[in-house]
Length: 490
Length: 87
Image (cartoon, rainbow over all chains, first blue to last red; front, side, top):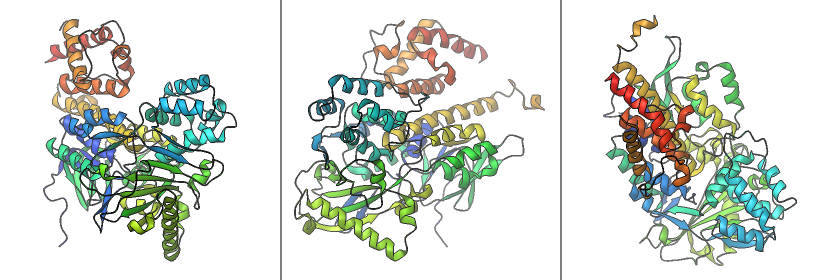
């Protein structure tokens, strides 16, 4: 008989959270702290979604997405998790760019970018100041039709090199392109520029372990290896309402669902389009899934080391800059995230994770044989590129492995294996979800701004607030029947 | 409840959300954002805490009423009193 991964789980919860990405984890934690009975279900054998890690022979621990996040994470970690988690967040100061247009190192904050733009790129100081100030003032609800490419051209006409300097890191951070709305760029870029790039000391494994500890302390019931197959809806009362989920074949009733699955998966696979108005279904269908990523994981043999070459290196052989080149199947643009022993103090180990932007279709159409050959190709190209920074590194590598959009699809169930959620229009669909189907909420990587570690954590809190409001209204309604008797509605 | 008591409850919430801020010299008529390092997530936290601690619901359209301590007191005190009258 197969193991019952839902053993000990009750038949009713105030909220069921589907998926344990950072938005799901944070939403679950907030709701439990508000006093709700919360069940969190994750299909994988590990929590974290894309905020995850894996171990390999030779004692390697590879972090998937610990490349760096804005300083705002310290505050969000303290408010929505714990002071202890916030205290382990430290700055990464060695951010490098190496491409045919420029080769430089920066601390990736407004002061240093201002210096570089003026001294190195010879941009007038007034333009730089105006650019940063204008960006800082952008709001996501502004109705600004300008694209990032158009906006950058307005401040820095004809300056392909400046656009690369400003845009390339953000394209790796959230999969945005020059064709996306300028406000999405402005918000994410400003978050980074406020104080640079930060990471979690101790590694993703320690962070998730600490988060799991907090969930336990706050009374969240969580289960791994549980796949939610369906969100149950009651349509008999006229207005549709979420009543539960089916998970690993078992029905669990609930007052609300927080889906941390992809927004399209939430609507079309989990709930079913029959539960939404046709106009909303059309809107949801039109949401563009964002691009994805490939990664190459390189483990340095125990006892060997590599010199400090920077924490995050944006490297490219492309002469000019386009965001199309970044996602090309044969791109020469990649980011090295170098994990030194300080990542996990006391470990004395080094790993390098090379990230490339990628399109799902380019990888999904390959035969098994082609797929293996192309994975071998990106491993070889990444090692050859790393040799330029650390000559002879090849002989020190004792583990090399590649992941593709297909890998992400397998482990996260993301629609089309996306690593960056959806384009901007996905945010409106995500936020409108509960107005369509009472009790169904979404939080996760969506709309470019609610993406990355900080974006998804904060979106988890925003959605938790909406769920708390909904449940508060329901509980108050149930607790005070004299105020508005149920029969009065008949 | 008086408006001063209401202001104190709001300051208690802010003290937990922003523990590093000195709240002893807050000017009640000046926007909180102009005196403290508060962002939109912090205001959302204030809304969540009002609901959690005091059962007070602030609809999104009224978030603007939380701008200063004075406007908080003007907006929230009647809500506190209405709630107290019910129970």
